[in-house]
Length: 375
Length: 72
Ligand SMILES: Cc1cc2nc3c(=O)[nH]c(=O)nc-3n(C[C@H](O)[C@H](O)[C@H](O)COP(=O)(O)OP(=O)(O)OC[C@H]3O[C@@H](n4cnc5c(N)ncnc54)[C@H](O)[C@@H]3O)c2cc1C
Image 1 (tube, chains in turn green, red):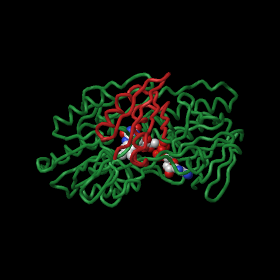
Image 2 (cartoon, each protein chain N blue to C red):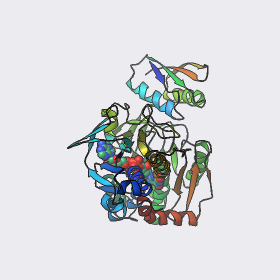
Image 3 (spheres, rainbow over the protein chains, first blue to last red):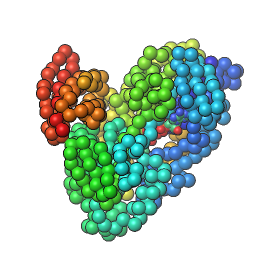
Image 4 (cartoon, helix red, strand yellow):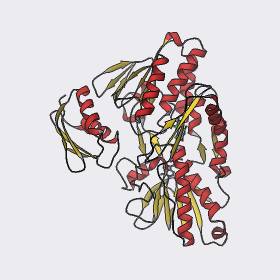
């Protein structure tokens, strides 16, 4: 039995490691084999980008080579998958072709700033490593003017990161005694500052206390030098634009005819790809109504590994994913809160406090244990 | 033009409508079908702010039909 996992992000690596632990004997007896096909040989811990732009973490702290993270029994193939042929159970990569018995699609999501004219030229972002490094440089020199943090599409990775970066910018400028010279504006596509109502209320209040302005129903269609133009017909000027660019799924999903936008039609409880009982999807690539978050990928990987290993052993796959998500929300450099929620339970939160912030800082280091399947 | 966003959750249907509006010619009628009740409130609010015309909001069996005309 060969399980092929495509995508070496959090979702793919965790699934591979959990499966390897559950299928030790089968792998040793050559009854099972786990392949991980990844176009990159490193894992980037994306939540660390939020700290990198404020010089709190470095590139070396947030990247590790896959070969050090994966269980030795997982076969790593560093290659780009170009076509998934679900009918014939084949994966075509740039330089090879693989058969599979079970396929796990974990190709994540990516930013597509080029979809908004002018954004690449005039905007900045911290949603990938290059963008974050550029932004760090600009922030280190920014002393006065107008900063706009603009969410340019939903869904995007880590729904709370734009809120966190806005809180942290406020404090960063305060520490450097320039906050009074800076206008800070946050924009969001819908009629409130976040998708979930009660989180919105809390954040709106905290923004007000910090003199952070908001614009809602704000959907950029073009960026020109120093100004954003929206679908609603408004304009907003800026000196520094920190965009959360639009997101898409992997080109592989589109090229394989699984969907037009790269989000894979997935069963919300079993994670089966609709129409195929031997193909599964998890992490950012699914079309599920859950956050595109590493924590979601983590909880889904637990469910998927339990079920897939049961099937391979001839046992009933009993685990179900109920939409569990956990997100820390840094509200300053010394305090944080967190929300957890699932398909049925709306989020609740605690008052921002130091302990939750310490937990997050500790998790930034402990993440590598999660990636190895230990934590 | 019909945007069938049934099965998608807030703010999915509104984001789908925005995508359609960007592509449609002025004067085009766009019908959004949504099974998420909050669309019946959020979409008309956005249509008003963006300066388009709300033609109809109607509850069908198990979903909402929201009809919008692109004005500019
Ligand atoms: C700034 C920022 C802050 C964040 N903060 C948090 C946080 O605090 N908490 C949290 O839970 N989440 C956070 N996230 C979100 C989290 O990082 C993502 O949800 C998570 O990485 C998703 O994992 P994934 O494996 O599904 O996808 P990805 O990490 O996108 O991985 C997909 C992998 O598949 C590979 N791939 C794609 N196509 C192919 C192909 N054709 N062939 C081979 N390989 C392919 C990609 O190269 C990539 O390595 C944050 C994200 C960002 C950007």
